[in-house]
Image 1: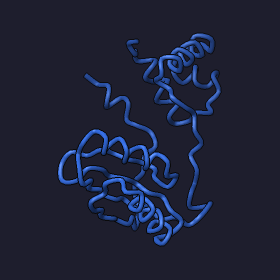
Image 2: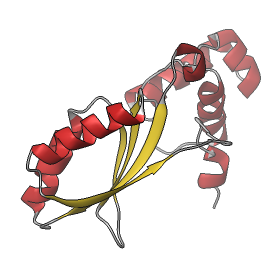
Image 3: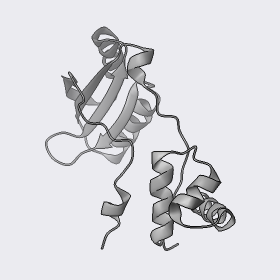
Image 4: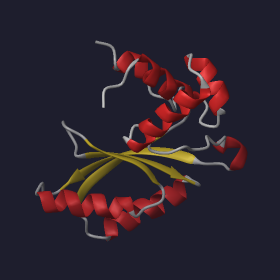
Length: 158
């Protein structure tokens, strides 16, 4: 499916406000409501829109700590990567897991109640014999910029 300018504008608008009414979305992208709704449904069915989520103000809910962790695996067979990825996928505190090229194998982002909680989580992973050779933890002090929306217009320019 080839996306046109209106499709991209719909996606940009939905990233900014996933609860926008169809009437307001249609007005924002220059369509009447019926064709706008048809396009949204088509974008959903094609998999361009994978979900609608609420963005939470975590600071109002609880004290948390974010920790980025570099993971080095002992071996590099496909089965080692698969076993590790399956295990971290079961850990609720792992918010992101990225296979990285370069000096280490994975970069994980943990969200925990405290440093002690993080230590319990990482020790639990290590105790599972997942082939973790070593790890380095980086505690986030401040996050002056966090974006939830991707810069679609910039990414899709030719």
